[in-house]
Image 1 (cartoon, rainbow, N blue to C red):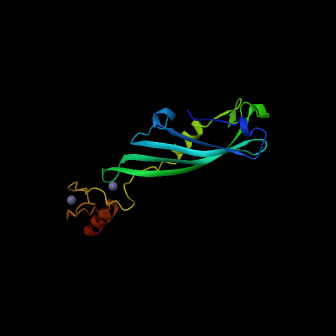
Image 2: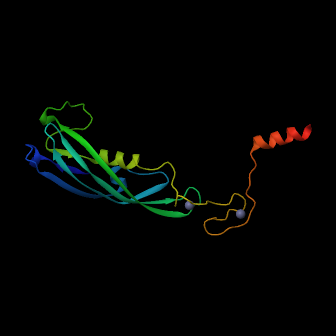
Image 3: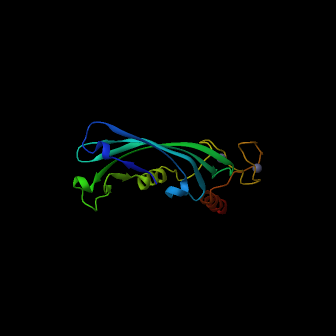
Length: 167
Ligand SMILES: [Zn+2]
Ligand SMILES: [Zn+2]
């Protein structure tokens, strides 16, 4: 759990409260299906903005995954930024407002998890120009050129070709 006590800046004395958390993916519910997030570090600060508190900073982590194209185990460093406003019920916020907190403590766990999950790409690729596996012999084409003829004809063109041949 990542909690920041804002009592110190409640009266808007212009200071900000820095924070740094080191967490496990399982502890914050950031578990992915085909990859693992490790070394998650959350760093930032809270500033009183008058009626609310702005929580901002960055998340850094390491992602272990299997490349979707060449099936090689790979690692990527990730950095994502966050900036959210929180309102305290003690400062008059409605209980049902989105980023609402009770007392002096803001729990940023859910926001951090959502930010981290939203930052994940739809596919995990080891490098942008990954050549993938040969559909014919299964060789990793990043490592060697197998020389197979992997040309797959477009079925629509093939049908047209047949039609032409009939005439
Ligand atoms: Zn790859
Ligand atoms: Zn091949």
